[in-house]
Image 1 (cartoon, rainbow, N blue to C red):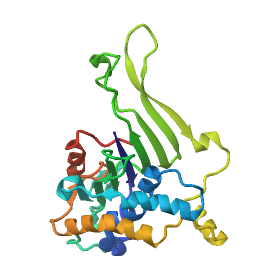
Image 2: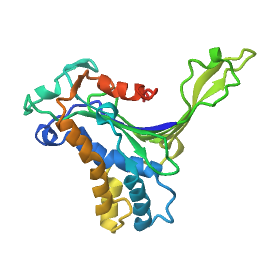
Image 3: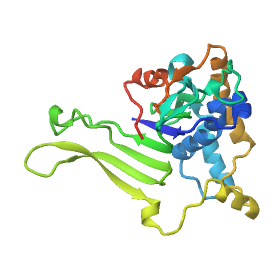
Image 4: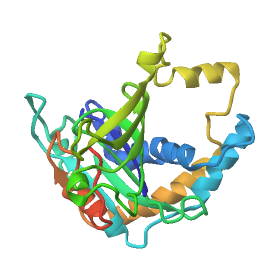
Length: 279
């Protein structure tokens, strides 16, 4: 049905006021991290793990991405306000130390992208990233369509969520499959359940830290995980029109700390008859 890629942080900008004021959430993490996750999710199987083969498949995906015609409806941005989060009062983005009170950079960004190829035609990808959100999590959720015919009655399935394959990038790396299961017993009740795989439970070896693998590849001269110039240019070609649209259309919407972003982000999915997952 659709794919959601989320990168949420429960902290503010900290001491990054100087750099963040010039960048914002979209250019900080969507241009690189989230578009990389999108490309890796949507790409076809490469011929090998060689750098050239991996890069070629990712570039095909990025080159096929189509921006929505109405950027006002299918993108959203926001700035976190001051308030209580996790038992403490936190400053608003514009009140952070060293921040200009008129700064227009977003601390939350969301957008809908479509991939114009045979496999992903009519399957929208929703991306969101932000600070001061409900919890720290990065995940890819492949949400499946509902079956056209339900064997169970409407009363048994009305409260069920959507079946989904969720890849947890951080924390607690792993994979979860969510689906509806009949409750044991004679009654015809169905309940959402999950099957969960976690690297921490299955293996005794520690997973590499965030940049540990990349630093090792630099030392070894291994290029597969590093994008080449064309890949970077394609990602900016996607993001630049969105950032330009935002600059020409007012200020970011405010959202409460500990929430999951501004109302416009929820409206964006509601327009398509969908809702954001709660990680």
